[in-house]
Length: 223
Image (cartoon, rainbow, N blue to C red; front, side, top):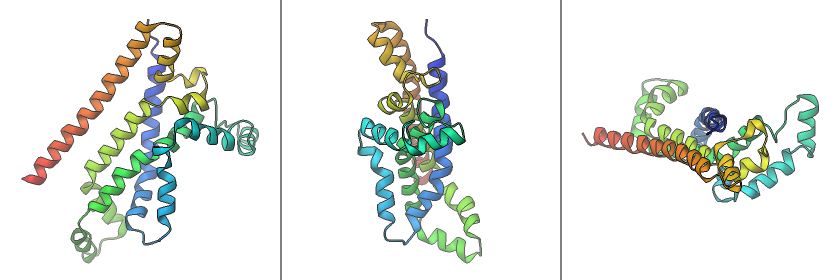
């Protein structure tokens, strides 16, 4: 019988990663889209690294700098009781790093797609930058925001290599993808198939939502 704990941990990881990254990515994307600071491209490139880096490479550097044997890891463990590895908090932090490009890319594209005359009109009306952001920009890029949310959540569901490296096989790091791997190794193909089917259905639903909202948004703009 399928244990629902890995599904719960996976969904919990996906929701928390997505919410945290949404809060982080809006100001970062705004900076990348509108800042005239020339060397911002270096920081933008660093953030995009997880897209091309193999998860094992990212996991290696993560454990090297934040693992239990690193200076930073030992410091946080000693004074705050916080572990960057082999804990749910650890895989959450790793997931935030790994999934940041998938949230920040569509939001940055959204900010860059805003017509300049719309922003100029808002400025001439005397609106503050915060007001322009919350009442003009964010409503305008809501489709991009939704794309970022869905892509980030879907990507979190499928994480395997990085989670296995920094989370191990602890009770609170047993995500569904690692559980599939374990069940396959134990030749429990039916149980592995059950977990795989759940992830497949959730992923399909997310893609369907993106496509439906994109189609609806396109029809509204066309009309």
